[in-house]
Length: 116
Image (cartoon, rainbow, N blue to C red; front, side, top):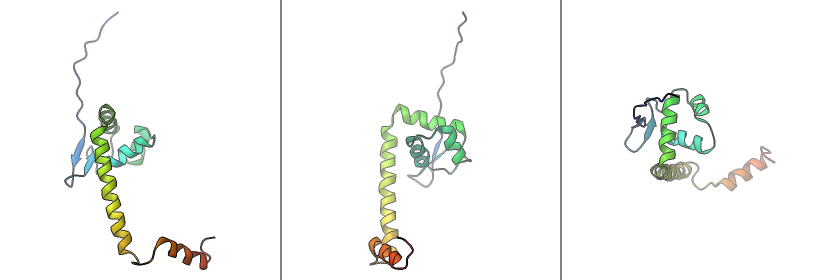
């Protein structure tokens, strides 16, 4: 039986920040949270690359591998992203038809026969 002498391997996590506080994967502009959320939904790295063609498979594996080793900082980042998305969503909703809520819009659509 022969043995193979592997050199120690360290793989860098291919992330870059643009703008500050927003992380992107590899040399693409794909957001880290999109890759992680897809993985959390059960998508394979191969399917993630099919969804975001500017990604490299090796980059997705590197990011997911690092996430699996220590998910806490990634989960913290995802939590921050969710909070910021909620703020933006509320700002957009407030800017659209102030005073008109979801229930009123649904009622109008029912009257017009657009929904049952």
